[in-house]
Image 1 (tube, one colour):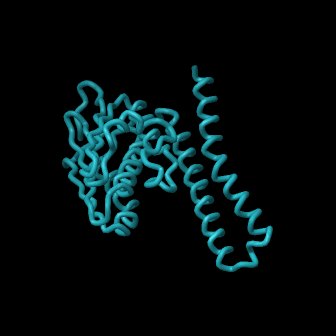
Image 2: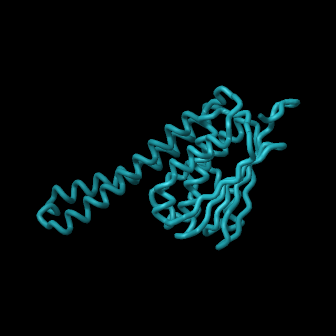
Image 3: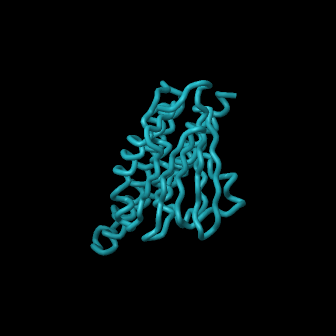
Length: 227
C-alpha cells in the first residue's frame, strides 16, 4: 500500500513538472530561433519564462515541505502566541501588498502539544491561502483557544463552492486554476497530512463571496492541561 501510494505520488509530481518544463523549453527554443531579434517579443517571452521558473521553484519548495511533513517528528508543548506571531511577521509583506488586515485572537498562556515546525507549516499554508484568495482591503483572522485545543484561520475571501470542499485536500488539486496562478496545489494537502499526524481534525466552512474558515482541533494527552 505504501509503495503504491509512493508510485502514485511520483506519477502526480511528474505530471505537474512536465508542463512548466515543456513551456520553458519551448520559450528558450523560440528565442534562439530568432525571437531575440525582436526586443519587445524577447522581453515578453523572458517574462513568461521567469513565471514558469517561479512555478517550478514553488513546486520544489512545496515538495520539500511535503517531505518534511512525512513523519510525526517530536511533539512538545508549543507556545501558540509565539508561532502565530512568527507566521504573521512572515506573511506581513504579502498582506500589506493587498492592504489586508490580519487580526489575531490568541488565548493567553496557550500551549499545544505539537511539532513546532509542522505547526508553522499549517499556519503558513492556511494564512497564505487566506491572503491569496481574499480581495484587497479584506480581513484574515487567526484565532486559538484551549479545552479543546483549537486553531481557526478565517477570511473574507472568495469562498469555496460546496462541491469543491471535499476535494481541496487532494494533492495538486486547485479549485480555480485561473485564480491560482503559481499555486502548486500541495499546500492544503500538506496541512491535512500534518493534521492527521497529530491525531487532530480539520473542518472547513465556506460560502461563495463571503469567505472561508478552517478549524483544527488538536487532541491533548489525557489529563494534561495547557500552560
